[in-house]
Amino acid sequence: MDGQGRIFTEIDPDRMREYFRQKPKKMVNKVTTVKEAVRALINDGDYIAIGGFGGVRIPTAVLHEIVRQGKRNLGFSGHTATHDCQILAAGKCFNRCDIAYVIGLEARGIPKMTRKYFESGEVECTEWTNAAMTWRLKAAAMGVSFIPVRDMLGTDTAIYSGAKEITCPFTGKKYLAVPALFPDVAIIHVHEADIYGNSDIKGILVSDVELARATKRVIITCERLVPTESFRNDPKKTTIPYYLVDCVIEVPYGSYPGNMPYEYYSDEEHLAEWLQAEEDPETYRLFLEKYIYGTKNFEEYLELCGGLAKMQKLRRLEFLINREGGN
Amino acid sequence: MDYNPMELMICVASRYLEDGATVSVGTGIPCAAAMLAQRLHSPNLIILFEAGGIAPLLPTMPISVGDSRTMYKAIYTASMGEVMESLQRGMIDYCFLGGAQIDMYGNLNSTMIGSDYRHPKVRFPGSGGANDFGSLAWRTIVVTPQSPRRFVPKVDFITTPGYLDGPGARERAGLPPGTGPYKVITNLAILGYDRETKRMMVESVHPGYTLEDVQQNTGFELIVEEYTTTPPPTEEELQVLREEVDPLKLVIGREAK
Image: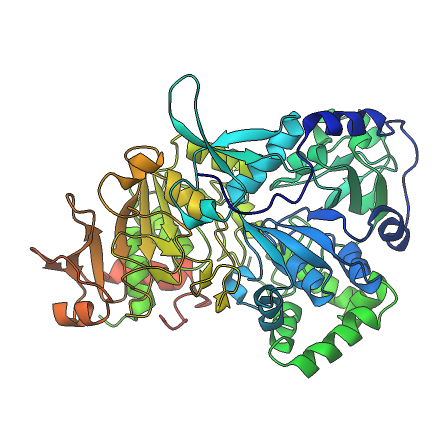
């Protein structure tokens, strides 16, 4: 069985070795702005992957800026993509997509215009699964061109994937070989980073450690910049080391309206408003005009959505703090 | 005792999760069932979320399988790779799945409606982790409301493997032996699978419904041999479900459709 789906990215590990050999590894200040990072590091046609889990620990500021700068013909890693997918679909920024999970917002529902975009034929799709995508990144992180896996066998998911059936040379068992995934750009939101790119993610890592290792250019946004001593004194904190990272941007509340574990919960009211806006093309146009195209930057978006008072409310929600008493 | 179909499905599902087992869950009914089992009879149930949360003490219902509730007082905040590799290694006993369509062999579709993949009539989110769990968990439990639209003779797209096209098909495809569909819990009945044909069969019908109701809401012929009446939710199950598991009625307040 050979999957019919197209493989959108480079899989030759020797070409990638050359790339990673050339990648600058000096410990230099990499702090920049959202605008500059998107302008300088994301080109039309690049294949991009977003860290976090769709509506949890996502780099919203960069996603909005990709839409505002009108990036086009991107490849998109639809790996646990929910609100991040919704934002990029709003700008019609991508034209090809590796799908493990797209369009839906988990328990919240399915946004109509995002779904239409995928049904329109404008996006070339290849099917995968969550495990397959995380293992594709793992293969890339290992510096090999594929990895054997035991899921997808016998299904249409495999037929429309880019996987190929192989036989284990030791046991004779059937496997699917899934190709390595080396994205051009990864954008990952973290809790803390220093100016060189050392990053600390608290709580679940999803696929971000593999992603940072597998990707050519890594953009980090962080809730807070911290001194390098914070990592030097406790190296276990380093989830992503600086030599994988190309730039760092401090974006407080940067995962809003998504959840940032141990910081603030998701803004379900705003996400519901967005979902509702997608029911009608004109409402949707006005919604995007108000929140994305009509705002200069992420700070303006936060203000529009309720500013500091809203952030405090989401912070209390995260920690299950009830001001009225009780627990 | 008064209860709604959501409450019934959650209570029934929770009874399958024995103490010390490992279960991977999503949001909604599966999560509620696991939380109920943990509070009633399986304090050592290990709940895993595919985004990486392992063995949390869930304070409230999560909205996302990766949100902070899934890591609340967890034993381990791992990665998706860690959860999926545990699964492939054989460490996950149960998984809960759903889908837009299911057929008599328990194959599930959560990818698309239509006959041409490149031009879907309706596009759904895709596998997510469903194919992974359906391929590799020891026992797959599907919890879903029942209708002829959902229970179809042939799914438009096999996103997640059930018994594929019958006995031996999973093994021939290369899926690990001993895995696969286990139960289907609906608003009308508990369905299992015939040992020989691997086709869906009636195990018990919920109180207030008849075998005819179950068959009429299924788009293929169910195997019927001996069957019983599902024991209704107990007072204790309902009390813990309503007061501790889902006091805000995020799941039990929804319509089963």
